[in-house]
Amino acid sequence: MEKQAVKTDKAPQAIGPYSQAIKLNNLVFLSGQVHLDPATGYLVEGDITVQTERVMENLHAVLTAAGSSFEKVVKSTIYLADMGDFAKVNEVYGKYFPSPQPARSTVAVARLPKDARVEIDVIAYC
Image (cartoon, rainbow, N blue to C red; front, side):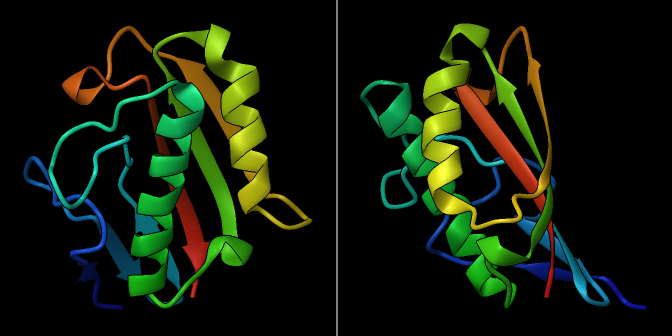
């Protein structure tokens, strides 16, 4: 049972002492992704829908690098700077997960890294 770091250039690089994801046996634990563009390192502009799409694409890149996919996600957590964004984030989020959708928590937070408006992390199997 050796843990293995997952790293891809197709998602934003870690901005601190953490890994994009850690694989342990047949599970992968993804660090939270915000709406950073992996090509520029800057937050994408646009409304919460555009920002959530970038978050989901970042998650997709890390899941793929780990040998997993959205179909294999079992748990997710959404962090929102403004719970008023819930409906729009939920609409984008729902497009990425086939049935049955993973278990999920959504929480409002005072502030996110780089003043992002949405952050999502997931746990999946490989």
